[in-house]
Length: 247
Image 1: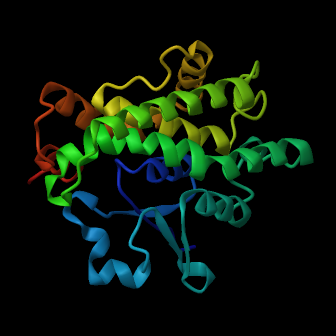
Image 2 (image 1 turned 45 degrees about the vertical axis):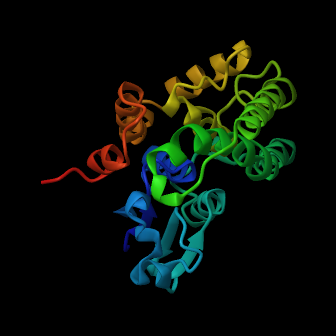
């Protein structure tokens, strides 16, 4: 069997989620880093694979070179493609539990990701990549923080409630994608879980449940965070050095 061709970027939230799922399940892949700091997603070669020029993306050579884009669509494809490798808790067969996972995934892109990522952009991305020519006004930045706190409350009070994980007592793909977004603003020192103690405990619980693979997948994210926290005026050179160090 040919390995799945997996294209990703270590600082991309959905990329980390897919990569962590692959690591935990042992699905055979061949990894390819698409360095967003060098705009490799816009290369002619990559656009032939994914004309929407984003990551993550996979190609299944053994299924007529079938291409799948978008994070949780990739994971759901892999679950169906390799059922023998994927424990049932990731995407439960029980109708009610599976519906809760689908419910969160429907919420995820427009709310968790759509809102929290704005804080990441404000405090890290636009600072690291001045070539983008974007800056957030003080008023907009404050509004984004307020919206992030609202999402944290929704995650804690309407999804997590008194459960161990977002959709039940076992971890699922919902936790996998959510935790990546919740952690992303910490790259600039922003604590997404501030004033949300149960959400903070959930982050720790997910980390413990998915280690040692969790720390392996997040290693480069942690390294960039450490460098940026030490020098908030740094350029994306630190990002490039961590992602693809000079030889």
